[in-house]
Length: 336
Image 1 (tube, rainbow, N blue to C red):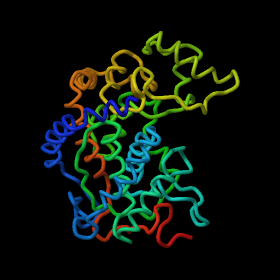
Image 2: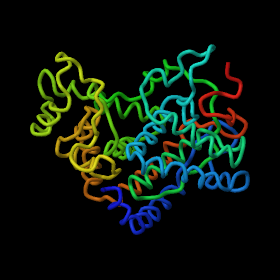
Image 3: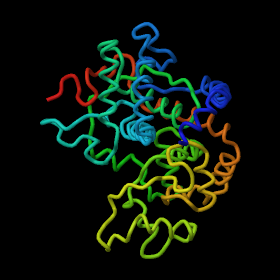
Image 4: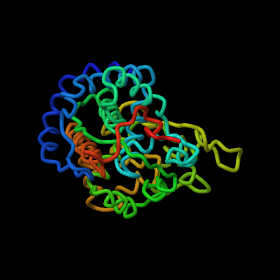
């Protein structure tokens, strides 16, 4: 099994990536909308076993279902890009809010986050926010699926608002071309380099044919490798032939689809990626150069990815007395 093979490489790669990433991350500014900023080891006094507890739940989940690592990272990305990293993506509909964010886009992992939260609450009731739990779970996914570790600062508070209408406004579409993507990331304080680096998360996980068929039919996108397109058509039939749009397929059709790695950038260079938003990264000299560099330097990409995840994790966060620490992740403390 590829996961077992990858784990044999873990110690050396983890140490190298962590040492490089730590130097980058320590200089990262983490903006916050509350009175304080995010901190490393934020729970060292209030809940010393917080990160360990999250890890002890996340790792078995991913080993049982290797696609869950990508699901946690995708949840984290979507949470941070809508209202900032405030766990608003996790809130269920209520009588007073029938359309929170999660009703606008199908994502996996909600039940898993609820289980992690329950485990943390059993150790430290009312201390650890769902926003931090999601950040830790995304980080731990990189450990299990990518074989590299990094520190994730914490101190986020949970938001009390969530609206489906915000999703279309802030989440980048897989059909976006480069400038739209750059603008979307810039709106969250992230750079074109961050865009390229974080896109490496498309090296693993699942997508649906509905997001791919536009590049296959009625004619194949000329930027897609013809052999790759022919193979993809077998997985994703034409929409008019009876559907298939809801069929789940692996993001990475070239190598192990459950490994987070720089393989994504090799796939981009070869025209063997799913989305317009993937292939468009080669349409400008600066982003193409970053694609090529990440493809050639796996450990450098690991360090960059770690730093970019930490940077994204500081987008529009609530800290200090802002927001709340939810008792459960699917509802605010005053839900109705």
